[in-house]
Length: 209
Ligand SMILES: [Ca+2]
Image (cartoon, rainbow, N blue to C red):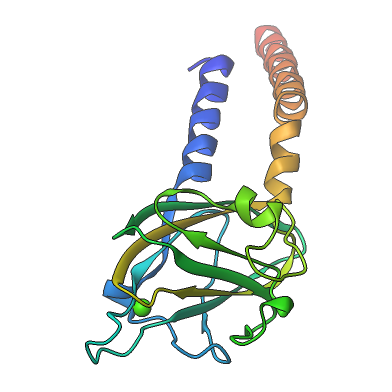
């Protein structure tokens, strides 16, 4: 295998690793997310695409309690969230999504939220959240920076099935990616030249012996 082939293989493996999905939380497997805004379920996100899926909401008037879903996640100092993509959301309506700072979120005052929005169906929502809250809020950056956050999902008029992905980027990977074209190639060429020189020297000695 030539050096070019090795580089192509490494690039493919890196791309695969970056796109790999992780089921960060699947209610069908991991259980219902917390319904308490003061004790959200902690979810450990990893670098790459983190899937959070489940159901929430309730049918107003039929006696079924509303299932609000709350979870919290933490981004390390070198991590950001670059995408919040809604892949499944139905039945479509105008469900409430909010994100706030810390390990709880206020149900009675949206002024303490970073941002919030009404979700009607699939699509990327981070730009919408970053553009400004639907109700009062202090603002959310895009990408979302390091820190701890709590998410609140709520629908009052129907039971909603949802599937979100949260894409986490770790900056050490970004730095490594930028260095790939220059450093490893130069190092490998130097190593190849050194091995060729050593091999040539050894060959010369054997010839003399
Ligand atoms: Ca739920």
